Length: 244
Ligand code: HPA
Image 1 (tube, rainbow, N blue to C red):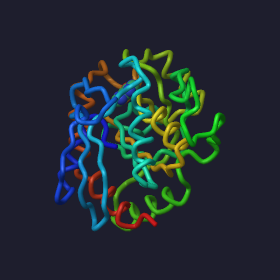
Image 2: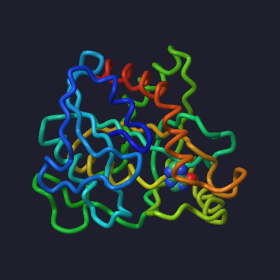
Image 3: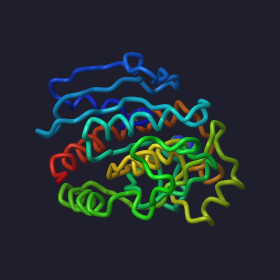
């Protein structure tokens, strides 16, 4: 799942077959700049993959982001790799930092599993291992082998769409957040409920509000994510090659 400005990673997929969201019943089109809105089936590092370029966010007003993880599980896919752009909260998390997601805080106060229980899913899914420990171990090892700087931390998922205030960022820091963004959490909750193992990678695209100079803008986020795309793509490809 490729987040804001990170769609270029899909260029690495060989024999790509593109399926626009509009071609999948029930999926709304992607509406946010930097999000293309298509699935790409093909080969990455010799493995069959299905990439998702663009995503639905809670702030768009529906829980449609839960549909792709359920679709992946129904297709027999076992692992979901999620990427996103995030604001850096931990000191030193400057634009361009890659962060392996160790865990998340669901601060959207929404849950994609509200309502009727989806066929085959539990009413109360376990969330004690949201980001698979084995996948994180291999991501860490691969990054080390390739001299790719990879941090690890907690992702705070907020509802958005307005960016945070400086006071909110100070609060998030005290709550244990290392980075903040508006995606991923709902998708990972849905994916875990559907039985997928998850790996999450954030690209820090800006210092969070009040921590850097100036304002936060979506253009800055998409541009910075695009600059990190090549490194992230190399890491993703190597991780995919080793998924057991
Ligand atoms: N806040 C929330 N979401 C984000 C940010 C941020 O600073 N940067 C990229 N996505």
